[in-house]
Image 1 (cartoon, helix red, strand yellow):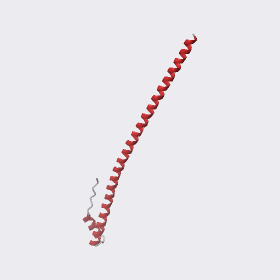
Image 2 (cartoon, rainbow, N blue to C red):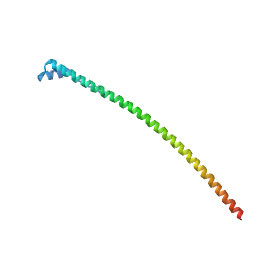
Image 3 (cartoon, rainbow, N blue to C red):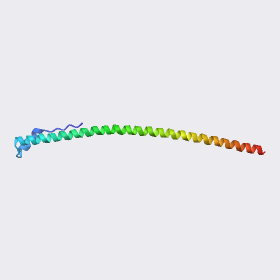
Image 4 (cartoon, helix red, strand yellow):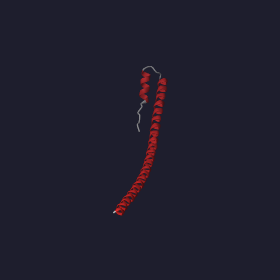
Length: 105
């Protein structure tokens, strides 16, 4: 986290040196300090939102990875069924051809 050093006394003295009254200089410095603090507060909130967004994105990525793994498993199972079916069909065709050839001799 960044710490901002803001010397209000020097700021008041500089404003007073260019013609501001002591009261005017103090008001300007107080307003400036409030603005700086508000900006820092917004930056901190933005950082927290970014951390929240990062966590949310990580969860989405994990969900997508799980979905992808499920899809891969389904495709793998389908591919194994297809290969087994083709293997049985091939075995049946070879057996039928051998029976046909052996009966013809």
